[in-house]
Amino acid sequence: MDATRLSNVFAEDGPFASVLLDVSRESESGAHEQELRARAAADELASAGAPDAVVRSVSERLTEQVEAPAPAARMVVANVTGTLLDEVTHQRVDQPVVSWGPLPDLAEWIRLADRNIRFALALVDHEGGDVAVYNSDVPEPESQTSAGGETHHVHKVPVGGWSALRYQHETENVWSRNADAVVTELESVIRRGVRLILVAGDPRSVGQVMDRLEKSEATVVHLESGGRAEDGGDEAQAQAIREALMAHSVTRQVELVHRLKDRLGQDFAVATGVRDVAGAFVRGQVETLLLDPGETAAHEVVVQDHPGLDLGAVPVDQPLRADQALVAAAVRTTAEVVTLPRAALGGVPVAALLRWSK
Image 1 (spheres, rainbow, N blue to C red):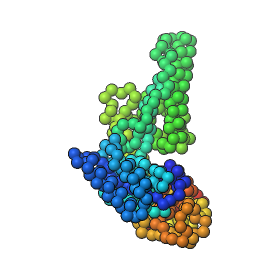
Image 2: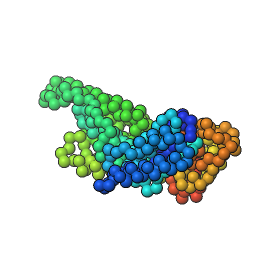
Image 3: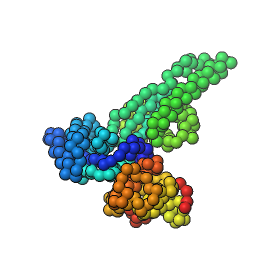
Image 4: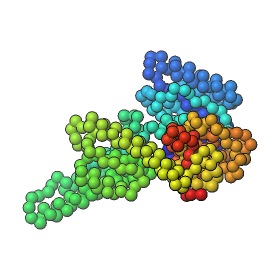
């Protein structure tokens, strides 16, 4: 996960109320069950010492109906100034997370949210393209727009002679300008944080768009089926999208695991274990934090043991849960956060890929 999206949370001072709760309404009694879960979370926050105003604020969010298909989990983080984070992830939560403490409790939510892939789908042809941004677990787009649309000369190409060559050249310019319009829209989407772009449609238009995005920060994938003008292509398109998302997710995790193993083998630009990773954060070295949330939560970090470790306004002489502390350090240093099982981390609860070697 790009942790910069959490920077506004860590710009505030604690203590923080953090609740990750199942807010699905799958049955006729779903609303009542949600209310009971929210009430239990509120009681737990109050017992932990959260002020009444904070408890009420969190409870109100958790009892609201979420207009999203099940499963749905809601993550709410609040302090005395108000709600700092309120997001829904389309995953099932078997055990709620309820916390009142000096740092937000976000590692488990990051694990769930990482399963949801935000991507853009561009369906293109010579007239331009339709660009929609999706979350992988929601069938409806969160935004959609059309780009291009210039059609002059596209359908009027005379046959024979110099005139035909002139019209062909002008037609190709129209197609190129329409591709440019699609690329401009996709670049705007990428600037908003979308890192996976799927492109389908007319092969020539697809090629133009992909060539222009060759140096983009996003991963750009050509879908072989499900183009803009295909009749009855919805199922083919849906299957192509599912396969692309699965491949992207698996590839990303495999690449990270291989990078970690390679660096461990070379003892180069890598840190393992809570103490070493905390030290790497002090030096500003961490590029990607890799952690098993449950395993890392069993360890502690004391700030004064790591002079220079920036976690914000927290007690420096008291133990903090390591998962909370290291996620806070990642956000405050703009490091990426990725959750992986301990077995994939070489048997340690947490590791870090570093920007440079020691």
